[in-house]
Amino acid sequence: MPLEKITDNVYSVGAQHFDRELFDALMPLHYGTTYNSYFIQGTKANALIDPVEPEKIADLLKNLEDLQVKKIDYIINLHTEQDHSGGTPFMLQRWPDAQLVGTAKVAELAELHLHLPKEKYMLVKDNDKLELGGKTLVFRSIPFAHWPDNTTAFLEEDNIIFTSDLFGSHLACGSMYNDDVKLQIRAARDYFAEIMMPFSTQCAKYTKWVKELNPSIIAAAHGPLWRNPSDILDKYEEWTGDKRQRETVIGYVSMHSSTQEMIQRLILRLKDRNMPYTLYNLAAHRDSMSVAVGEMAGDLVEAGGLILAAPTVLVNPHPACLYAAAVVNTLKPKIKVAGFMSSYAWASKAEQFLTTGLSAIKAETLPVLMVKGAPTEKDFERVDEFANAFVDKMDELCK
Ligand code: FEO
Image (cartoon, rainbow, N blue to C red; front, side):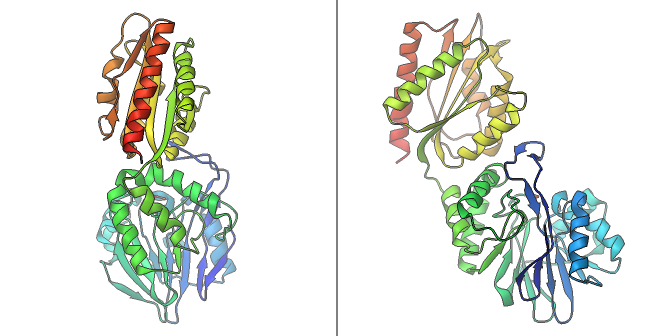
C-alpha cells in the first residue's frame, strides 16, 4: 500500500494483502486485508504504531524510506497478535535504538509471542501521554477487543484515534481512503462477526466511549480510515445491541437429498410467511466449511434466526454441521430463535444437538424435527409445522 498522508506529519505506512483469502485459518476474505501502520512525526521525536505482519515488512520499510525516515524513536505496539506486532523484531534490527512502547499486557504477550524481553518496553497505562513535540498520544486499554492487550492511542492535536483491531475491516482497496462506505461497512460486519462478536459487551462500552470522545478520524489496524466515524460507531451500537432483524440464516448439509427436500419445503413455507432468509450449503465444495460458515457468521451479526439441517452420520449430525455449530457457539451471535432438522437412516442421537452443539447460544429453540428415511408427505407436513412455529417465534422476538 502506498505511503499516504492523513494529516500534517501523520502518515499511513502499512501494507495491504489484497490476495489473502483466509484469515486465522478460519475467516474467508472477499476483499483481502491490510495491516495498517502509522507514522507520526513530532518536533522532538517520532513514533511508529504497529509494525505490520512480518510477511509484509518490506512494504513498511519502503514507505518509511519514501518518507525519508532516518531514525525511529518509538515503536508502539497496540496489540501483540502477529499481524500487527510480528514486524517488531525486524524493525529493532533496522533501528536498534528505537524504544518499544506498550501496556504491561502488551509487554507480557510480546515476550510470549515474539520472544522480546518485556523489560525492553516503556510501559504505558490508561491516560499516560507520549509527547512527541506538537503531537501527543494518549493511551487507553480496550481489553478483549479482542485480546486482553488491545490498546488505543488518541492523537490529541489531530483528533485521530488509533483503535487497533476495534472497528477494523478486512478490505484492501489500494488506499486508506475509501469512498464506498457501504462496502466498508459490509467488510466491517464480517470482521465484527468473527473477531468482535464474542466480546459484544466490551465493544459496546468502547463504542460509547469513542462516541463521547468524538474523533475526526478512526484509524483501525485493518482496512481504510473511517473519515466519518459515525458510519462505524452507529453500526457497532446496532451490532452490539440486543435487537435483531426478522431474518433467518439457514445452513444445511445433504447427502442423498432427504435433508435437501426438507429444506426446499421449509423455504416454501418461509416465503409464504414473508420471512427473509439466506441459505448456505455447508458442504457443497471442498472449502465450504470455511467459506459458507464464514459467510453465515457475517449474516448472524444482524439476523434473528438460525436453522441448521443435516443428515445423521454415525448417530451424530453430519460433521460439516457440527463444525458450523462449533463456530456459531464460539462467536455467540445474539440470535433469538434456533431450530434444527435432521434426517437419519436407522438410528440417531441428533435430537440432542441443539442443547449440546449450541449450548452457548441464548436463543429460544424449537423441538428438533427428525425424519427417518426419505421424507413422506406426512413428514413434509411436519416441516410446515416446524416452519410456522419458527416464524411465530421470530415474530414474537424480532420486532
Ligand atoms: Fe488484527 Fe488481533 O489482530
